[in-house]
Image (tube, rainbow, N blue to C red; front, top):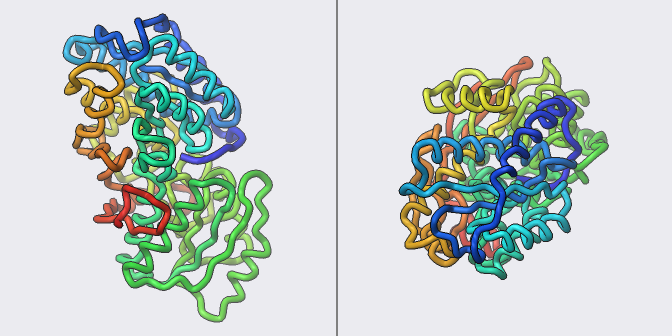
Length: 417
C-alpha cells in the first residue's frame, strides 16, 4: 500500500489482539525439503509486520489471508494438498524483511508474502527473486511492485495499485461532471507520488484540466496552512481537490483544509480508507470521496452476501471487524494463489510463477477479480469502490472501473504504452 506510519490510536487495541492471533499461525512452522521442492503441500512464508509502525497496515490483511487459508484447508486443500504457513514478524524494518526472507527460503517455502508497501517489501522480494521463488506483496500499491523489471519477474502484488486508484478517481470525478481539479500532493512515499501522477495523467486524457498543484511532506506532524492559503487565493476555483495522500497524514491534511475554509469537494486514493479518517476529520466534515477496495462495517449502503459473510467470519476469528478495505486484499490474495497453485505443474518456483501469470479471473466476495499476467504482476481488473464521507459517516457512492491506465513514462508495464 504505502510507506511507514505510526499505529493509529483508534486501531491500537485491534492491532494488539490481532497480532497475537496472527502469530499463532507460526505454530504451523517447520521445514520442508529444499526450497520450493516439497510438492506434498504448498508452503507459504509470511514476512509481515506483526509489530512496529507498519503493523496497522499488515495485520488485518495478514489475518484475512490466514482466514482464507483455514477455509481452503478445511475444505480439503488444493487438490487434496494443504497449505502450510511459516510466519515471521519483520517488525516494520526493511533490513528484517530481507533477513526473514532468507530464513524462510531456507525453511523450504514455495512462496513468500511481503508487506503492504513497496519500500518495505523490496528487500524480501529481491531475496526471493534471487532464489527464483515467487513473492507476493499482500497489498503494496506502487506500480513498481508489479512491473517485472524493477525487482524482477518473480515479484507480484495483490493490489490493483496506485495507478488504478489515481486513474479511477479521475474517471469517477470527470464523469460526475467535475472537469477542473487542483492537486495537493503528499511527497512522503512512492505510493502517494504515483497516485497523484496517474490521477493527473488520466484526468487530462479524459479532457479534464488541472488548474494548479501544490505539495507537502506528509508523514507525521502535517501542516498545510500555507498550501490551504494558496488554494483559497486562486482566482478561478476548481471543481474539486485531489488529495494524493494516506492516513493519518492525509486525514490531517483534509481536516486542515476544512478548518481553513476550503469547502470544495475532495477526492483521494484508497489509503484514505478506514475509521481513522472519520476519527481525524471529525463529524462535521463532508463532501470527501475516495476510491477504495470495499465498503463494509463502518460504511453504509453497500452490503452484499459475499462481503457480509467475509466480515462475519473475520469477526468470529479475530473478535473484531476489519477496520478498512485492505483486509479484503489479503483474503483475495490467498484465493488467487490457491487457484493458480491448483493449476500449476508443481509447486516449484518456475512452475508456480507461470501458473500465477496465467491464472486469470478469481471469485472473491466483491465478484470476479482478474489477477496477474505475464507482463503485469498485480490485479489487472478490479472494480474500485467509491466511498463518500459526510456528517461523520461513510456511505457507498458507487463503483468505478478503468479501461486503461495511462502511460506516464515510468516504465509501468501494466499501463498503456
